[in-house]
Each structure stands twice: as C-alpha cells, then as structure tokens.
Image: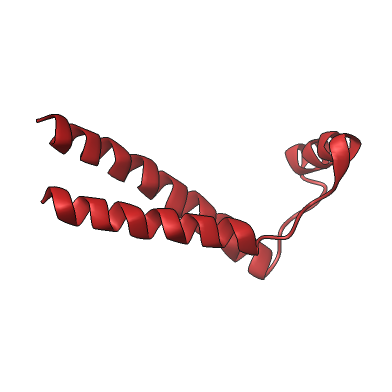
Length: 78
C-alpha cells in the first residue's frame, strides 16, 4: 500500500510541475504582480479556454498532492 501511494504521489508531483509550467505568465515584475493580483481578485480578468482548464487542473493536482502527502506520511509513520 505504501509503495503504491508513493508511486501515485510521484505521478501527481510530475503532473503538477507540468501543468504549472504550461501556464502562461500573467505579468512580469513586482508592479505587474500587484496590479495583476488586484485584477484577478476583483474579477476584471476571467480565464477562458485552455487557461481555465490549466487553472482547474492545477487546483485538482495540488489538492491531490497534499492529500496523498498526508496519507503517505501517515502510513510511513505507522
């Protein structure tokens, strides 16, 4: 069970890295990060198409990665 969870965890980690690298940068520099964050927070820019798919895949893979990390830690410490 432990080995299977570790293999799935590695698959999730590689998938998460790949999805993050496929995403487009929103803006560059510190000023762009501040204004880009504000626009995203207040909904001025909405993701469409592939950007939306990559964003949702990132969230799913990140949640799966954290859950699997906790499960692996639990089974290893047991």
